[in-house]
Amino acid sequence: MSKNTVSDRFRKVDVDEYDENKFVDEDDVGENQGGPDEAEVDGLLRQGNLNGALHAVLKNPPLNTKNHNAKERAELLVVRVLSSFKSSDIEKAVGSLDKADVDLLMKYIYRGFEKPSDNSSAVLLQWHEKALAVGGVGSIIRVLTTRKTV
Amino acid sequence: MSLCSFGVEPLSCHAWNKDRTQIALSPNNNIVNIFEKKGKEWVKIHELTEHTERITGIDWAPESNRIVTCASDRNAYVWSLKDEVWKPTLVLVRINRAATCVKWSPLENKFALGSGARLISVCYFEEENDWWLSKHIKKPLRSTILSLDWHPNNILLAAGSADFSCRVFSAYIKDIEDKPGPTAWGTKMPFGELMLEHKDSDGCGWVHSVSFSASGDQLAWVAHSSISVADAAKGKEVTHLTTDYLPLLSVLFVGPTEIVAAGHDCCPFQYTYKGPGALEFVKKLDMPKQSSKTTTSAMQHFRNLDKKATEEDSTKLDTLHQNSITQLCIVSGDKAKVEKYSSVGLDGAMVIWEFKH
Image 1 (cartoon, rainbow over the protein chains, first blue to last red):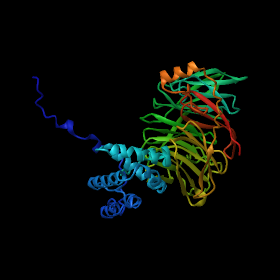
Image 2 (tube, each protein chain N blue to C red; image 1 turned 135 degrees about the vertical axis):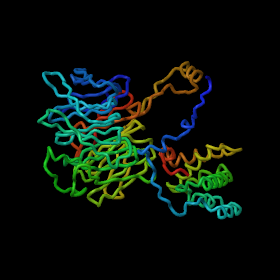
Image 3 (cartoon, helix red, strand yellow; image 1 turned 60 degrees about the horizontal axis):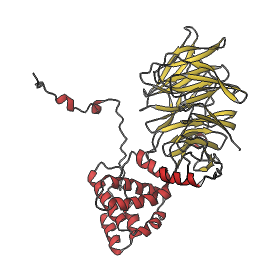
Image 4 (cartoon, each protein chain N blue to C red; image 1 turned 90 degrees about the vertical axis):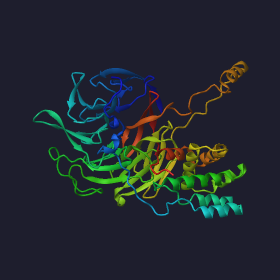
């Protein structure tokens, strides 16, 4: 009496998938969306060209791909580059970016916050403060509302 | 600028009568209050209580003196003043979700109603049966309509929606009006025809508010993190400006090139549009008075430090509005040259601003 013997597999059905009014994002697959070039960034880091590495890592963001691996790799690479900066250099580095890059940097920073590791949060917070000074609250709003997450 | 507080409840929406002596507002509930200005005070003269859920939109037609209200109870009523009493007439909007916004057309023979049912209901009065009918615009709306604005030609309607797009439709009803002439937006305009659709590909969020310019050739809209203008005179080209501020919730054309927008930053901003690619921020329109630091006694100073860990005792914002501004409305002048405009916000205050051209 106490155990329901009829199958309850229907409870695991994702009803939203069958909703005909479901909003589907248009997928414009862009080229060059595979994520920043690891080799190039590695080279620049080893040479000590931190600003160059920052610009390189902010190229080709994996915005349109559903490939989670590409996004993970891009994120790890970005956090590596950001961690290798000295605190005093962060402000100048952010100053050298243009508006679109500041928005992109904010997206990576917030994604980095999602999976903290070791010292990453402290470093990301410093970058966040400097990026906020340049991008304003608007850049954070764009992180929250963007349909193309990095 | 003058501020008037209507209580502590947020003001969802407001509308002025023709000579701006009366204002209809709703304090975030199902009642519309009509206040009349007697001297310096606003005195409540009428209460409209037909809706059962929160009122989401009010519009007052200046010439015909009719008020249309819409609420989350999926209804809209048109109110007419008879013998000093406002009498409601139900409008058959046929929506199955809440109504979100409502606007009379420039000639006041029809009004448009946006709803969460992903459709716009254009309603007009049918004489023979003595009731209000509606026609629906459904395609290609994919989500809730957040705001509406009419073109001066009484036919075209702009709609901002939560599916990140701003669109211009034709709302031509052949039963009540003549065929429209061609405009910069297009020549063929059957009912429901889509004249412009702009989806922001960078994910700038919902389109909170739309506004046609006085000539109708430009359309401005605000989204979560940007303000944009589409120019029909220049091939429907869209100019886009990302903002560094909190989201803007309401936008208004106040001159041929001047735009005022306001939102969660509690302060109106002025933008200027001179042509495609030339949309710029001008300035904040709220000049905060430099509050003189009132001399606090030493005891007060240390008490604050002890209790609140701050030295100042002020929790008030610098701006006139203490909370987000939800709606802007023209008070005097017309879209070609607005002299005064009003704003209501979540702080229950209504402020009348003067615009200097």
